[in-house]
Amino acid sequence: MTLHGVQALVFDVFGTVVDWRSGIARDAEPFLARHAPGASATDFADAWRRRYSPAMEEVRSGRRPFTRLDVLHRENLEDILPDFGIDIAAVASDEVEALNLAWHRLDPWPDSVAGLQRLKAGYIIAPLSNGNIRLMLDMAKRAGLPWDAILGAEVAQAYKPSPQAYLRTAEVLGLRPEQVCLVAAHNGDLAAARRCGLRTAFVARPTEHGPAQRTDLVPEQDWEVVAGDFADLASRLGL
Amino acid sequence: MTLHGVQALVFDVFGTVVDWRSGIARDAEPFLARHAPGASATDFADAWRRRYSPAMEEVRSGRRPFTRLDVLHRENLEDILPDFGIDIAAVASDEVEALNLAWHRLDPWPDSVAGLQRLKAGYIIAPLSNGNIRLMLDMAKRAGLPWDAILGAEVAQAYKPSPQAYLRTAEVLGLRPEQVCLVAAHNGDLAAARRCGLRTAFVARPTEHGPAQRTDLVPEQDWEVVAGDFADLASRLGL
Image 1: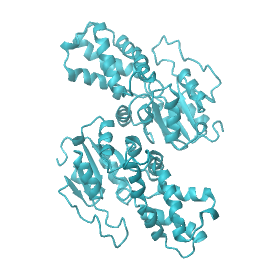
Image 2: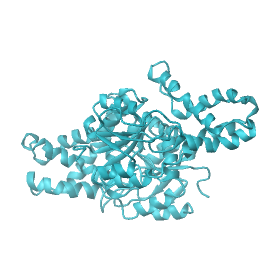
Image 3: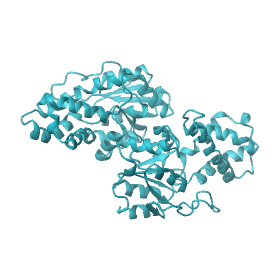
Image 4: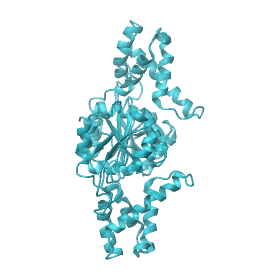
């Protein structure tokens, strides 16, 4: 047994469980057709996502109190509109908000739901995402992600990769860090979890950033488990 | 439609969704057989539960920082053992802890799971219980309670009937109070929720406290919905 003593698997979500880039591009397309004809929807998704980590860094650094991701996403969206030649004053606020909720409507990778169902038979499964509770809830309800609970940044009141995000999640589960395993497609997330004492499982998602992706194609440390997808992960854990 | 504009149903759990008295008595029975032969298991359940609200009052009053219910239950359990002639020093700590987890193993009322499945098709459903996240998670996983998320006191960092317990739950859901309906078998819980602007649904659980129950047998205000059980509640909401 690779993960002896582990009782809970906690999951990075954006990129690991769901395909954010395709989902955002799909929902941005009709918006761009109206307001910025000819703009690339995947460029728009990439631009929006580039503001993600800097926005959370304001919170992680202590310069800003904890603010849920829906709010940061909305600010970031308003920030990038001018880059695509869109005048925010010319777009109805409701329309901006509808696009902001695209993060609640992301599709899982093809293996995610069936894999989580198998993993749920042997472990507590929960997201440990920077996405807020309502975002994760809407996504799960729409896509059928069978979480046992919705954990993550909003419950911990700390954004990954701050240690508090991992440690408070273990604490809420009533577990020691080594009884929890983070499943993620990102070496940096796994490295931060390992520094907190969690176990680690890497699942490659080589097209998260599109066909030309060059990061996180391979495990960069000796993670306890390395799997090709969630079906492979379940098999490796004997489920 | 009785609950026009409501997007989420949040549930009291102990007494409303699950039968705590029978469950605690069932798990206390073998413990008492070993340590206090002849003691009544239902008396034991009632004694343990009587300490519930006073323990939370220490937190609600601000005399004690937020402390999760598993910890309060353990303290309360140790407090009542002498009343049943049990010397805490004579019982292994693991055995006390195993009994403390009886709250994680409570059975739902017969209509709860099927009713929640129906309600889930039309609403976000989540516990708004004073039970902590891991307690609610274990209970749901064992009993098949199909929550969309686990909310409640630990997420809100406030115990019902403090207003913050209701208001922060609505806030986490991204909803205004009137878009949330509390489902509970307790008039006092519903009254506190109504004072915060939530809608209210009363479901009678006339044997929560055993065959001689005299409280909460009938609705004491004009709650928006009054139902006989969760199946009736689902029907009244058109599901």
